[in-house]
Image 1 (cartoon, rainbow, N blue to C red):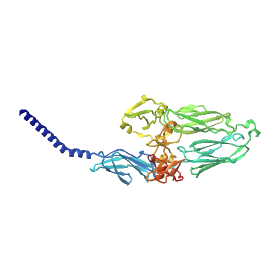
Image 2: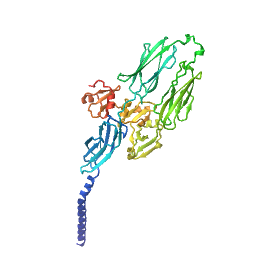
Image 3: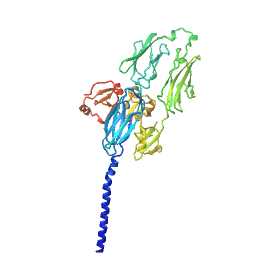
Image 4: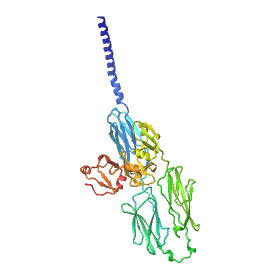
Length: 492
């Protein structure tokens, strides 16, 4: 009996303890649950693509990623800072994009306000600068024919268009002897040539056009072609003219420690063979006596490059150009713990190296990779503007690793981009990315296929599916880019 009694007493004590614990737990549940519900709503990302460099009339895209810690639907409000307010709802972990256009230049402070079911609020602010509407600078181009005009030798015409990068301009030249040709425009100095078959005076006309055919500007000049062998001139009259100094900078947007190629394009009215010496200064103390030098800058900045050309009679002429050299590309390699993906940090942005082959082609080494947390990687923005080293074409690379060539510099700047945001890649890497051919204008349901730099509307969803297009590969674009593609036939 004693043993049984002891056991019973212990059982009562254990039961009491369990009941007491349950009672405390029940009392605590409301406080514990309330504490969870009352946590502030959060946002992992509130951005406007770039935080400065926007222009009046362009689409500013606001990205919101976040929500409520308890998966509750929360109310959100964007105050654009100019009196306009937009309200919407947001779930935990969702991403929301909203575009807006500012009508006036100025500094704005867009504010995002989140409110949960317990009326707890959280605010997030941005600071953006909106500039006057951007206008592409296509200045009147320079056009001349300072070259040999002897029968049997080519006449060289050189022209120059001042613009940021290759654009959709076209040119047509009429040589005056029945010969015409169309030319793709390249920003900067360009040279073309033509050979005449008989002596005469010819009126040459070069016309600059938009891609659609509208004329922007034209230049004309007259050249006289003579047969040098029959002119009867004495040698004393051979060198009566100064040479004309000109050169090209062949390396687009060079970086520190990148080789820059300079190409002489000088001419001499008395015959190009009369040119004999060249003298270059590169603006940082460096010089060269080569005709077509290669030079490497050791630090970033803007430099004045000057070239003097001298002919056999010691006649000379000089010219100069401004070159901007950007910071050196840094090989800072990172891998998130537990992931096989390797990222390169370039100018504060992360760039994923897509294959092992490309990694080694860049001369990278596994020993240079350091392991980081996902949080540290998220502290960098994604590198999304790329070009092949030494070229001018810029490509936008989407989040899903598709590439789309930026059609012109007006489009480039309409997204708030800057030239220093463009990173260099190899031809091999550029070829790895799939072409982004499906686009739609933000806020519109219609889908377009990009084909030969034109957009073709896909008539219906059935047509879209019948052609085997992928809905996940549609990229939204702003109005400036959308309008830059001429419209072609509908896909039915």
